[in-house]
Image 1 (cartoon, rainbow, N blue to C red):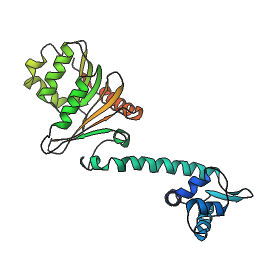
Image 2: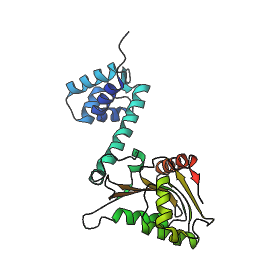
Image 3: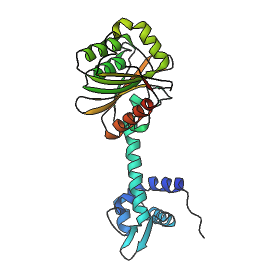
Length: 258
């Protein structure tokens, strides 16, 4: 029995022969036509066809060389993989400025608007997060940090009934909030349009799912020293769904304070 090729081997060959597979996705064709379409030597095309055949991706038939069912699936998946990597390549100048240990899944970054800190304006990400989140109609959020301006701006939005907010924060931070911003929070914690939860879980980074009216995910990132590094905003369904799932997971084990 022949040895089953490894997925990594199949993917490597499929990526290398993407142009040829793209032609075959249009239908069966001859080696000569493949040579013309991919603009390479006939001997190279013959070797490529033999290799793809050995991996079960193509078959030689009376109609010409054609993709197998397996080959069509692999070719389509390969294109999607390359397209996703291309998106990261396009965003590389921005992503290179983010923390190397970025605790955010790919769907949050893919296609996101990115605001990074600048030497002359280190608060750009925090300002973007603040204005984006507090100007929304509805917000569910989680945060491991407390900033005076955010607390004051949220207070105004809650008391003016401009926002419906549900926020999960870490237990240690609750003690800090109540002691440092007790006066600011007077009347806010009793508002019907604010729900505050505390959790013993490690939230890791600040994020929110907000609507204005279209839902979007907002993420605020800090480096190991607590400095703002980047703000990400993504309104894709995948990113929003991830944010809601992350929030619900944290809230499930949290205790409501207000």
